[in-house]
Length: 62
Image (cartoon, rainbow, N blue to C red):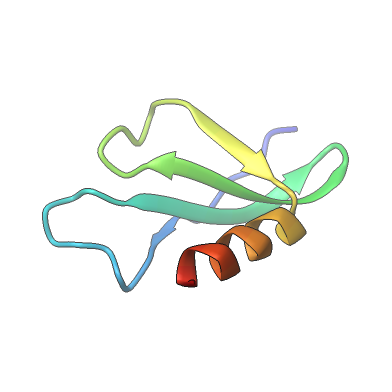
């Protein structure tokens, strides 16, 4: 699967560049939320199901 992802940073990211970038896309299994380190944009990425990402965000928000 070769798709162009449109990456964005959280509005809560700090100005020092320490943040995660997120892109919405697809995997063979279906929809996915892709993640990468903003400092290493050509480095490794991983993808999770949208429901897993939503669960993580709710947990992180406390």
